[in-house]
Amino acid sequence: MAILIRGGTVVTADHSYRADVLTQDDKIVAIGESLEAPGDAEVIDAGGAYVLPGGIDPHTHMELPFMGTVASEDFFSGTTAGMVGGTTMIIDFVIPSPKQDVMEAYHTWRGWAEKAAGDYSFHVAITWWDETVKEAMKTLTTEHGVNSFKHFMAYKGAIMADDEVLVNSFSRARELGAICTVHAENGELVFHLQNEILKLGITGPEGHPLSRPPEVEGEAANRAIRVAQVLDVPLYIVHNSCKESLQAITRARNEGQRVYGEVLAGHLLVNDEVYRDPDWDTAAAHVMSPPFRPKEHQEALWRGLQAGMLQTTATDHCCFCAPQKRMGHNNFTQIPNGTGGVEDRMHVLWHHGVNSGRLTMNEFVAITSTNAAKIFNIYPRKGSISIGADADIAIWDPEKERTISKDTHHQNVDYNIFEGMTVKGINTVTISQGKVVYQDGDIRTERGAGRYVDRPTFAPYYEAVKRQREAKTPVAVDRM
Image 1 (cartoon, helix red, strand yellow):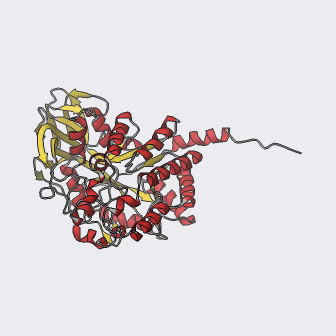
Image 2: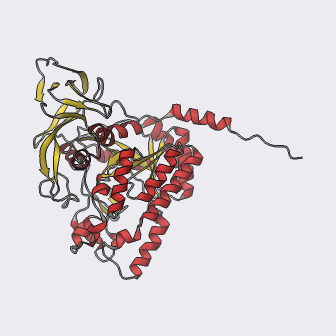
Image 3: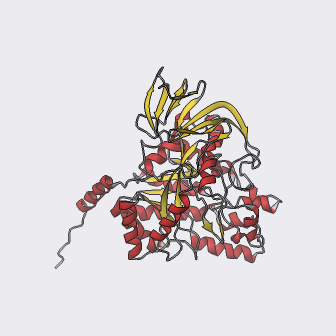
């Protein structure tokens, strides 16, 4: 099947230009002016619209078992919601329980994801360490297309990776040519502060940000960066929410270290006032980690994006409905952590980024798609409008408006952190694998149509690192 997108302006991370785009089956096969449509082609009029690479959300948690319950969004509903908003691929997380066989967990998640409507891949979390984990990392990189490993520095007593796990896993990742990712919060400090705040009689959602101040994030980010520096491994820090972690990333990048930073759309636009909402359910709906911060942190994060110190945007899409959140009604530490956003990320970033002048259109494409594809080694197959790339495309109407609401969104959750926000500039057509899966409110996604995307490792870079390290090997000194 062929699709001809006619009359639009192609916008990539590098430049913008007027061109038609022709897809055949699941690939882009031609780009140019006044292209001829094959006889069986579907023609889409993109006059006045922008033709963008489909969005990549590099941080989601579909149907995640967490904190005594399971996230309400599954891989089909979540990827469908993403398609409505122009996101055509997600990178989710395999999270083994402590002492669980890593390969067993990986195959479990792969089974859950078979219902996905759009393409997907996985980061795999390292939550404990022994020789079987070391061997599993090799199997994942060589046989299953995994090139990134996640480390939770928070959640003591559950999935927290201590320094021993970090050092072992980072070292193994370097050997394999993989990139390490971290959730940067000092789990010991969080655990201590949670207990202190509960002792003060603070049990509601307002206690959540008090137990996770910016300093615990900044300390963990800096520690992870220094470990990565010593071990010569690239590092990707997820959901940076505060000035302190941004400062750590900025210092490291200015020193030439390969450190990448992700920011959530929510952390750019929602502040900590939500935790003081008099309605408990509304406040609890916003409980996630790291928490939403005071407004000055949002301004810093926007500047980090503009300066290139933060490279990607994500959602940490992990939905729990009101009855699930109420598991922590008398103890904020038991409120399941997570919010939504996979449907709204690109819309709110265009409105508050491009329309405000904070971002150019090309920067928008970079932070919502291309940079993630490059960092996780799937470019130009993904994140690109180019001949031979996957036909994953969003057609963007810069004049059309939408008011975001839980009553009209397609995410399987009973609240929306952007509730009532009107955005100008929205996705009107989504093409995935060369098929129209969304058009002007008409959803055509198919259960199980999503493909698992292999992500190759970065062996050439690591061979260079190895040679550099060998050149610096200290010579033994005879002191006799």
